[in-house]
Length: 262
Image (cartoon, rainbow, N blue to C red):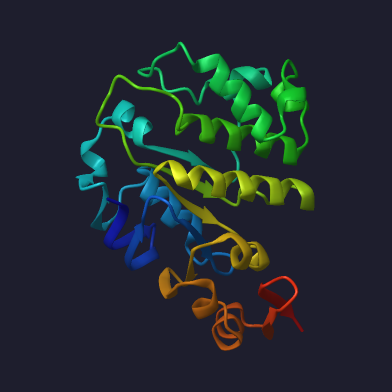
């Protein structure tokens, strides 16, 4: 059971955004996708979510080709959070959050699940506020809570096919302060125990080192390396791909890798 890309390539205009991508996102694991600007990270997430159709190759979710699923079926099995999710109308925060509740699911627990997701993401105090009045970091927390609610582990469903689920998150912490980004990553890891697999695009390499089970390093539309953080986050690999000197060391007191730039 996994969300997987099999030899996926993607052409956008006259350029190749992705080339020969093979990747598996397994339930119970957090995969961090890293790489320089323009490397293809967002394109990969959009293909895996079903938003973009690959030029070649296939994307499967638990053995089913993603392009064979209708929108309702796909919504039951994965949620997605983009870098920017503009809203045509200025909904209230609680209305935006409610958009994450998949309508085929039992509504009896919707209120409880929404309140719990909001509490976990520290947005309860934002209920009743217009979404456009929020700061960038607050908007990200609301959209993360919406994506979380869509795969909510306690939301019983009449569709018994739904078991494993996936969250696809594109730079979910980019506008957050230190405390809030750590909170979000802890919440993300807590949901892994409920048969959820997470793929997350990150620019902060120290967050990837701290929270990811698997790190995928992408450059120029191709996977350069993939595996546990200590295999991918190395001086030579990061310095080569980011084209600047990078130093990685194990911090004994913290018990994890720490990434520095010269």
